[in-house]
Length: 100
Length: 164
Image 1 (cartoon, each protein chain N blue to C red):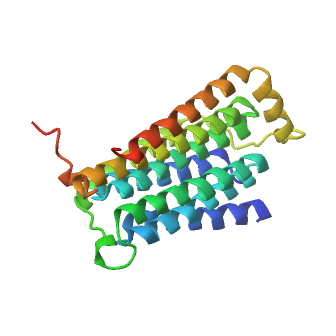
Image 2: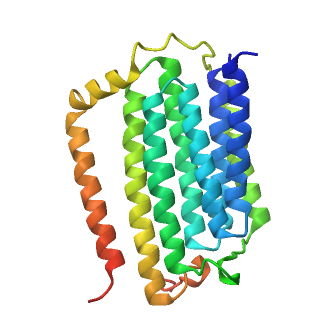
């Protein structure tokens, strides 16, 4: 049988990979993909804890995080498109308008 | 080796491989396709944890919805063919060090935490229980979620529509 720690270690690995993507990608869409991976790892954790503790609340919470993530990615991509319209680039390094 | 054990290891390998491909492949469009694979693999993990309803939600919202939106965003901001879609990465070594440090911290915490490996009997029907909870104790939360989704949709529309 696969225990709870196996699921948690798998989720931690996926989270670290997503973090690596967020830190290293230059393209804003690539950064958003890394954030998606990290949130996905969190969902694995929530469902695993809910299953092994026999608690329903974790499943409800997972539903809410999935929905909120979808809303977040929609707004994030809309911002990326708006930035592209103004600056003609979505490279995070060149978006330094707020730099003092 | 039970079916669940074999399934877990297969899905774990697929999930980790596609996640690595998402952050490492130079072609942004391919990265989205690998992300779809990773999201489906996560859904199969939900299935292994006896949650078919969450598997369906994962497929519909993430693998169906999010991937479509991201592909549209890439098509609007990059050219699908040609060199511009190739993206470079920076600070590869530093990023790897930070990510490995985060993983080491989490794994070290996991190893000393008193975690159960015994899985309780599955509930009779988790989907029914989720449905009852969503219209029972979590009804207000569900309504607030609807408000949030409408707000996010209007916000996204406002940002992406441009000046007119």
